[in-house]
Amino acid sequence: MGAAFYSYTLPEPAGFPDQPILPERASYDSQLGEFLPSYDDVRATADPGRAILDFAQCTYEAVARLRGWSMDELALQDEHPPRPRERPQETSEIATRKAPTGWRC
Image 1 (spheres, rainbow, N blue to C red):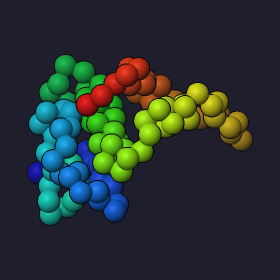
Image 2 (cartoon, rainbow, N blue to C red):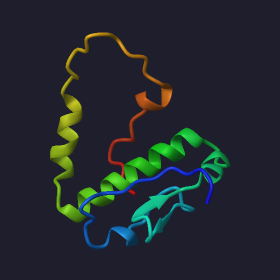
Image 3 (cartoon, rainbow, N blue to C red):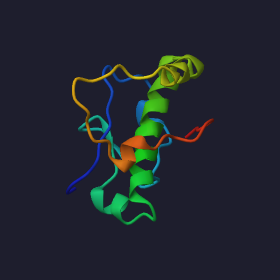
Image 4 (cartoon, rainbow, N blue to C red):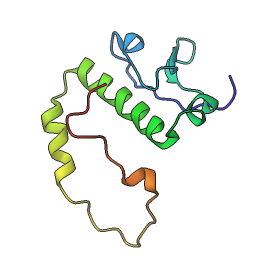
């Protein structure tokens, strides 16, 4: 495989490799212990930025479910404003997008 995005978790919860992940062509590599959508597959989607966000959200939610984390409690953390930084940083368009409310992979 050439260039790819990846997501892994340590320690890996049981069942992680079997979780449904977006984009659909993302697959679990048992040698690396991570999910991988290839760069070319992401680039070929109608909205590559959304495909990357979907991938990150799906893998995050898969781990949260498998570890028994409360999605409601985790969502509350998004309501707190970030602490001020010493110097402003530019935020990319992708970084400012959020998954839709009630999102589930």
